[in-house]
Image 1 (spheres, rainbow, N blue to C red):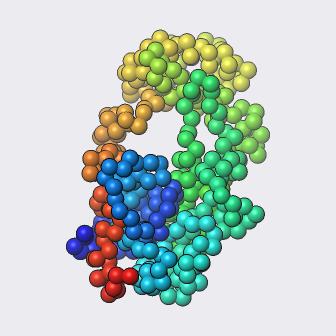
Image 2 (image 1 turned 90 degrees about the vertical axis):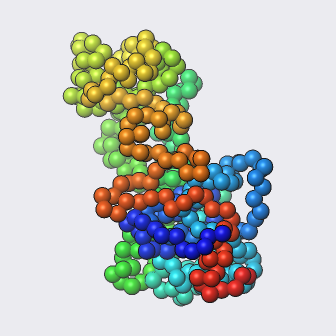
Image 3 (image 1 turned 60 degrees about the vertical axis):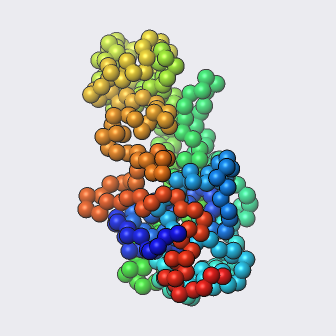
Length: 378
């Protein structure tokens, strides 16, 4: 059990956020806020921990990295006394985040009207797939469905040979969902400092994913996306290539100077190669590059391209990424409780963020938090 309130550091130090336990984007948002110094109190159901149980995608146990640095308050929200405790906690909070279907918080007696009446300055962050309103608001769904509705899933093309592409759960749940919820909550907190009034933040993954496609929508409106689709895998110079050892290399020299740098390393400077933006030549140039990159291993190519402006990088596995020299130099990955995980980002010059601790066991902070609130155990 935690003996006292932990000390926080980072640009959000001094802020208290109440997070209602769930899966996917809401916990990731809570992790982002905690990494930046906010005190995030996770309200979750009481449950015993079986150390012999195998982790699952829906319950990673101590491997739930998105719970790092949080405090845990385990309560049965079907108990009216527990609801009273949560409301007492909300009175002390700056923000609340939840990821339930629309109406669930209201049925618990913890809807925005009730919470804002108890704490008028509260920022009430709501994370859903479809949003609080609209024909699909009450429908079930997952990342792949939300990204599909935004138009972004159609941009991904996975070849039969296993060509890498962006995992959808990152595009939807984490980028379109969690990051937009975090941005919305912090924006509303800044506004509340001026106005003294809280508000509801309705963060929908479909909305956020659509915004992520702003650049693509602009290119599409200009008639350039379908015509060239440079960023979607049609161009030979913005693609991935298999090396002699079966590993992959990524290429991205979009600008002509960088494209020339690629050609210099590969010894390519003929008329076909110089016609970088002629789509008619792309299939043949793609095949040409496939043959070239298949002649050396990934590490051999990385050594050849080291220090160049050819926009080349290895496609690393999750296990390889922490050991790459650049990631090591940046300390982009850290180890907590024996678990390797990404370090907080972005970096701050004066008030750096930091992980406040390992993943707490459910209810680990009940005694301390109830004492702070002056509440009895429900």
